[in-house]
Image (cartoon, rainbow, N blue to C red; front, side, top):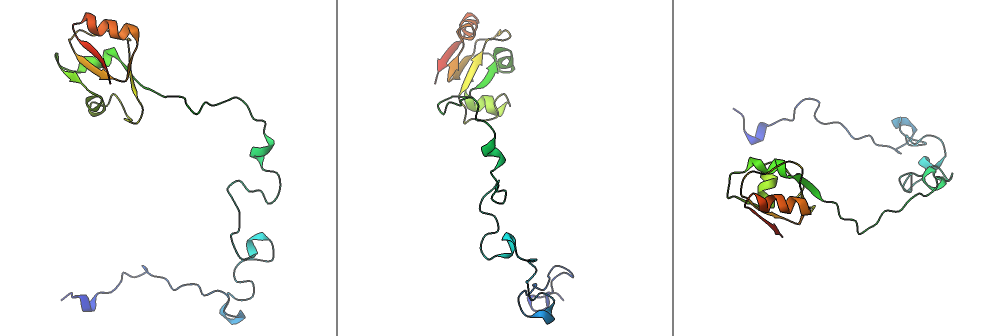
Length: 148
């Protein structure tokens, strides 16, 4: 009968710890598995940071800087009008519904509706932005384009 008193670990699931620096007779004495001299043989962190090249000038620093990336740039998740035909007429299309249908992958980005394709149903679409032509097409079909 199996009880807590006679449980045993699976064979090979545990290993004995390598005891380094305990004399030459242990097989892991002297340089303690660190090799001979050099930076990695010393105590402390072997490499100060990612991209460190042993004191040589880093490749990243030798390459020229090019261009400019604005920290205020806004990236929109784009949805075309043709994709909104998935919804039934007189539906409130919210950003959660767009995510549920798989039209938007990331709700952290604001959503913009673009005018590619046609819309035949009257829908109330809630989004952060609309292109002028998308707004016109939605209203022509009898729907509303509401900015969140």
